[in-house]
Image (tube, rainbow, N blue to C red; front, side, top):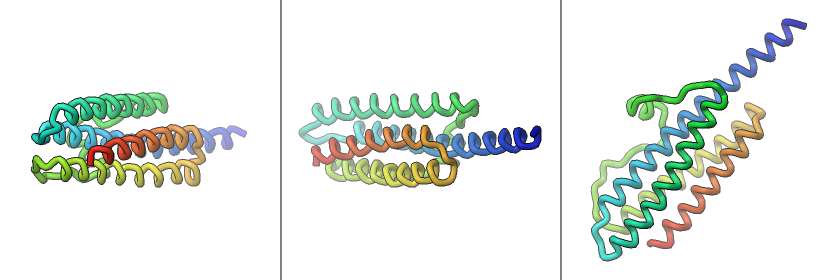
Length: 160
């Protein structure tokens, strides 16, 4: 009997570790997207500057809430998230861009690309949490994040 409980606890601890790794990668990805969005706001210099400036502020707020909710999920499973930019760069899955441009279309297209890449990663993460970790609560949480990113892509597209 005690052996079964120990095995169950070991499995739960392993699952929590795997889920934490997933969340830490996702947290790093969201921070990368946040920084890319901040840079986009700074780089826009075209005629619709004021409208896009306000639009990007709304994007920051959405991404900040996403980042906060992911951090809270990591805390919920009793683990820790990376605490330095170097750690985030190690676990992140989005690649930053050194391309500097003031062209509104290119800037927004780059953001759309990053959000779509994150949507694909979230889809894979959802499948993994269901099929490998048997964790429907985490899959549901990730599905809500996916929906937010799909909405952001739609909103970004309206500025193209």
